[in-house]
Image (cartoon, rainbow, N blue to C red):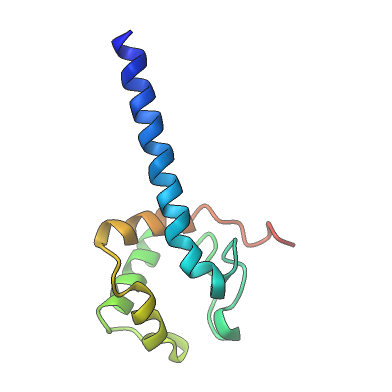
Length: 104
């Protein structure tokens, strides 16, 4: 019985974390699309499927004001400025799963 309870707790925790990550990504979806399939403001690259390490590196650099790709540095700094390191990691792990062809 304890095994099942522990398994349930782990599964529920995973679902809540996933739901939180989807909420975090909603701020990104306005410009990047639901599946990361849009070039934000017709300037950026597609982010769907982007490798976790690259996403973490870029979001952290935007957060710290150290990156201004496509002239979007200020906008991105505002978007990610309040994210914690764990939020950035969760977003990166979600973004790598996105399929830019899903909405086509």
